[in-house]
Image (cartoon, rainbow, N blue to C red; front, top):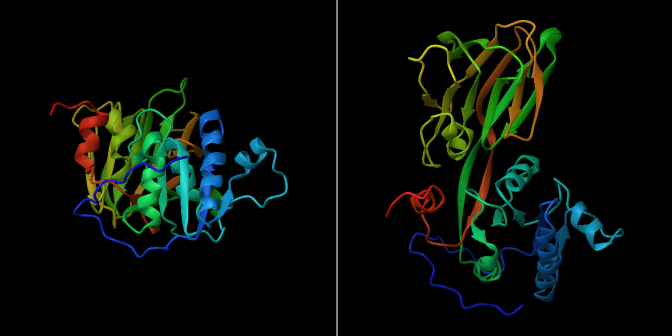
Length: 301
């Protein structure tokens, strides 16, 4: 595919040395034929430029290639290109075992995390491979679910952790503490604990605030609280947030980034704080966070 002319680098971009990326991983949204086709096309484009390429397992199967080693969470790559939407990028961000720059290509709908559209893919990669990009650090939350008998499950999330009742369950009771200080006992449909990155996801739909992604905070947002005075709460992400389920005999679930999770039992404790891990998003344009808000949320101006 012919390379399109590149645009001038935005003033805030931090130039990186040419040739930084030599090994590239490509991940495609499994359910999207367009993403799978684009992944195969992109792999050939990268190989022609002398780069080593690893494809995810779904893309290899779609190509009928059963011999190549698939991209794994511990693969030694310098860059991961994600073809799909925010959900695909969230899945990749949680799975990587070390910080690897991620370039998100939006083949979905809204796309707050994915940096470029399909038509911008190759011009953007030309800039990236030439070292004209910047990296944006995004914080993760560490989520630990403590059950009786010392059993613990742990996750790291980029968007949010949600404690919520099932569709048929009644309203649930929760106790919330921050740094061992009691915030309150309350009844609601659930609770969202979100990173700044995830503030434009479920948190926004539940009436929580939009946070710029560089803020070192977490936001705690109740879902349909029975007490109308209970409002979203923003706390430092260095805080230890703890939620205890006080309701018995109801179906309650802990969901991570809307993609995985576990059931929560009576008196189980959920502890949430800033993770030691982070995510690096590749930025190639001069578009700001506020440009994205105006475009995606259709604000005037």
